[in-house]
Amino acid sequence: MLQPILTFRRSLPVIAATLVVTACASAQTPAPRSFGTLASSVLQDPGNSETRELRIRWTTAQTAAPGTRAAASSFKLVAQARMSGALRRERQPELSVNDLVVVVQDSSGRDIDWRSVPNPRLVRAETPGRDGLLSGRVLERDDVELFVYIPDLPGADRLQIFSPVWTGKEYNLDPLGQIAIGSGR
Image (tube, rainbow, N blue to C red):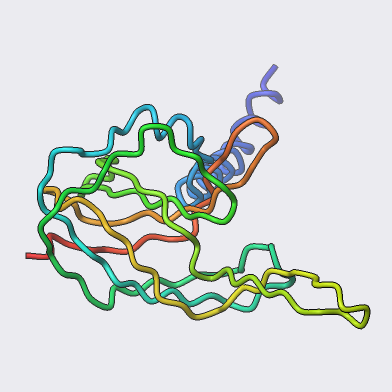
């Protein structure tokens, strides 16, 4: 009877280490998000009469093939400006894999607004073949400027940037990165 207790006591450090590694891994990797859940739970601010224009430098590592996500993305806030005028709310958003979803968060990580914007990395090219017929392909640039317009909300602290991925039923949001924007004041 003493043997099972001793075996369990010897296993405790291994069990504890496994739990710590699992907790750390899940803390570093955001859980998949559903766009439908985001759009229904975070209402876009329709009443704010001030808008912030954010100019962001987006640099990515070389991708293995067009259409695959880069291994690493870095975002740097280049400039921001305030302007008058309200942004309209997307009542029936129609997302595509050619868009990005930008979520505005406060300093505690609470989502306070979201916007969909075209992905500036994607460039469509059509060239004639030997037979004279046009064929198209999509190129992905590695270094682009991303312009994002958000309502000038009190408490806005950072942006989370996501790439939509179609699952066959809905769009899930694949995290690309985040950028601190501060109050901008």
